[in-house]
Length: 260
Image 1 (spheres, rainbow, N blue to C red):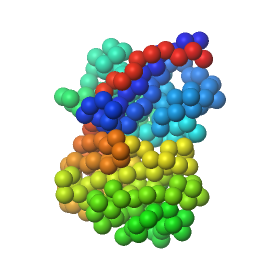
Image 2: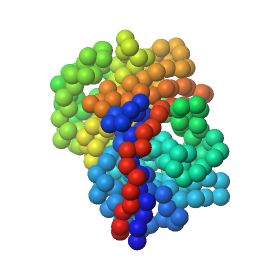
Image 3: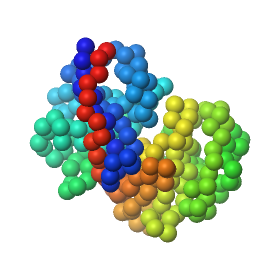
Image 4: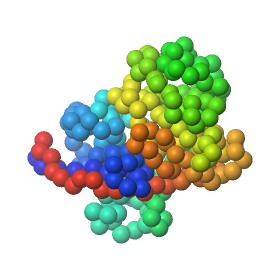
């Protein structure tokens, strides 16, 4: 069986930036094990699969190790493929997912994700998380899937050198590290070795919690954020009641065919 595959740099202003995701459009679901094997073979932080549905598409996301409930950059990449390569002519796509209905719109040069906002509560930092970082965090918060560590400034975020084995022991999907920024409203990095991604270049799902948190701290609902990984990515952020809007650009890197 031959399947089309696209590799897209999401939240990227140019090629070789942002977060690369693989996108595999399907007419019907493959066996879960096969989709996991394809994601492992791709060896990107996420591979997205989608199938047509009555009101849009069903979408699923796989890391090299596991299926996840929500992935922003691979959803943006999937929308980019539909808008630019598969002839989707409307301005809004509806994706049904493990996180409910996700709307994606095309707004000028941006593709904008409409995701549920996630709240976080102050908690004690777990010992394994504290030991994982060379710089102590000012505070620790816990969301649905991830811990979030607050640091003093952007330089501390850039200087973090995580111990990934300690993070594997933390029994969490991932750890978001964030601070205010002099250039942007806030910056972040995201580490998720437990699901096979030591450092994710740009993480839309992490911003469902980051946007809600920083909107409260900064007293504004519209913000520009940067995930300061080695590749880096710019995110146009908006808090809208219990939803977040996350906008970014995308660049097609590869169009090909896989045989399974």
